[in-house]
Length: 220
Image (cartoon, rainbow, N blue to C red; front, side, top):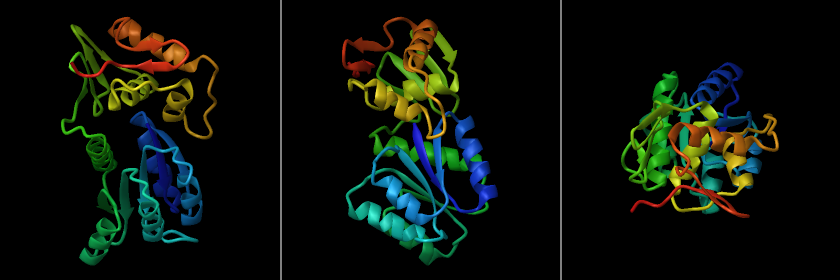
């Protein structure tokens, strides 16, 4: 899953970026509100972690414009503004969750997983299609009797497919969810990751639709 991090503090941004990457997210980081607004117009990201006290454009204004355009991407606000009125305004402007600094990065990751589940119509913490299951908090995947801890990028690939079971994702769409801006993508990277997941969980766990892409089955 590809996350846009919008944070102008270098120390906080670096810490959050590392934590997100360690949790198997692809992360793109910008440091001002104008850049965030420009990036969000392209719709490349599946979630946003947004500071409010930003240069060039305030985070609330970024959020207001995002929702005004009908963009429903999940947004978790991280901010030093701890007043009740500030939290109410952030939520009313369209934030899916609101976290006051300083915070534990593990709490941020848990809140991020929760808002992504809700936006994807998933109530349970474990993603499943009835045959295959994936635990985002541990990267543990199960299929039949096979139980495996996936690598970060194997997890990212399977997570993208399980968020939309029955939907074909193209090579480009999968690459977009697995790799950030500055990460080099080899030509056969998706094939290599799919081979790794199939080797661990079974050859039929991910289906290829020739000339189109890959999918996992819908729930029965």
